[in-house]
Length: 94
Image (cartoon, rainbow, N blue to C red; front, side, top):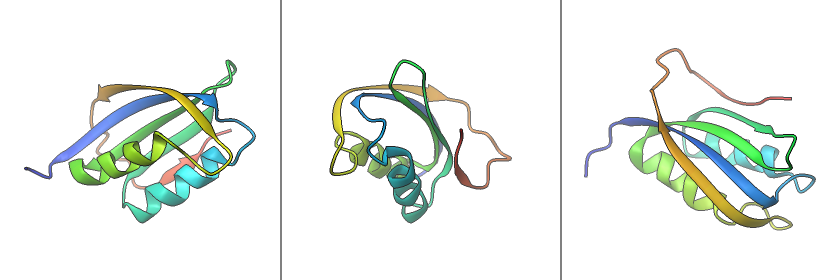
């Protein structure tokens, strides 16, 4: 398996707002050495852009299937994106 850089956008739906999903995702992303961002969406979902080595991105996506303890993830929609060469950090967007 190659460990090349990849980027994905993910929409997480269910009970994912008001349960520290964004802060928890930022912590996991930093632990997995990926960059990008996460934000709440008006429809109640959470959207994230995740970029890093394939295996690290997969670890974050695996976590997104359950999220933090009080979350109830019902669905994930994952879409491949272009790698952003200037991305350096993982941030929570308001």
